[in-house]
Image (cartoon, rainbow, N blue to C red; front, side):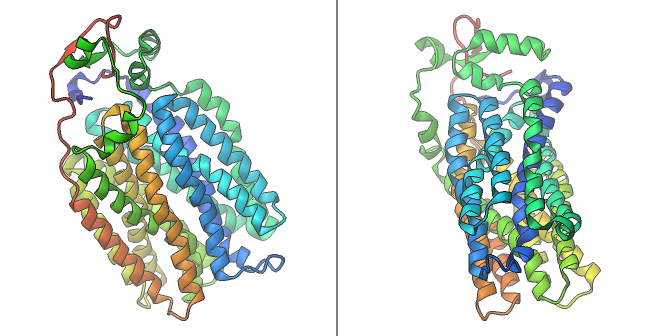
Length: 453
């Protein structure tokens, strides 16, 4: 899809804000569910009824990530085939209800099964929310808006850390997890206020619905625009599998490879540190309250950093900002090796949060904006699905180090190296090529349609 000039962008700010808010709520709920395991991990390690080893604890951290791998793969693709709004809501239903099941689980095996099923929904939320955010944001504000929307993820992790600080001593780890089911009450609100993607409706030939929705959203002068080649054929004719194969075409293959590598490394950092940071810092000599403070700062800094990096990426370019801050994040991780004061270590943890979660969220927005609209959800979902292998590896790497005779400093050295590798992969991503090589003409919506505004 040809990118609309900024001065031609006619989606009202109110509509953009509404989409961002609905997606933010969904991502906030997911962030809590992702972050809650790291917040309760020290308590689970001391839970005598289950008597879990460090490696088993790392395995529990990976159950949800396996589900997220599958969810991102299929739900991201389905959002391009059956609709973004439906898949966002379905994802929320899955991961909120299974949190209640995990809180009840009498055995670690059942706990893992509920986390696995919940991961299907958690994996599906991100590619769908990414596509909706990009589609309803002006071209010069897409990275910032994505960072704004995705700040809910980091704030959800912050909420999990706060819940662990205040609820854990009173109600135990089960009560902390049960809070993750509360966002199920948000689903009717999002159903009412979140609009469907106009680009999705147009790509499916549902032109009258797209026009009616555009009128409802007060989008002035709404006119579908299609490539000449499609007009001559009477409309889009691509089979469904083209939704998948486009990202592996000659035009996009190199980009796909390096996007996948960089996001893989980014999620190793996000999930490895998020799961094990409290335990690592406790091993370094901090008490449980202080170690949870590190997780809190790690997440809060990444929420603020996502906004700053998004703004900088819109102004200076996504690639430059990602390379610089992945390297700075790795430096922050490595400097935690030294016996610094609490304040200095919190500063380094903040850099680690920005250089892992903030950079990875900007990278995810970069992916959603890089590929054509008709495969946006699919490309983002498949990249995230592959990256979930990194997310699965992160907790396992931390568990392996914790269960081995390696010093705790090995955690920081390994994760810092992964951050540098992510920076190198981003640097290899080629510049995006123009999406529509043929001329585009305005046509009557009754004759043909595929979306731009």
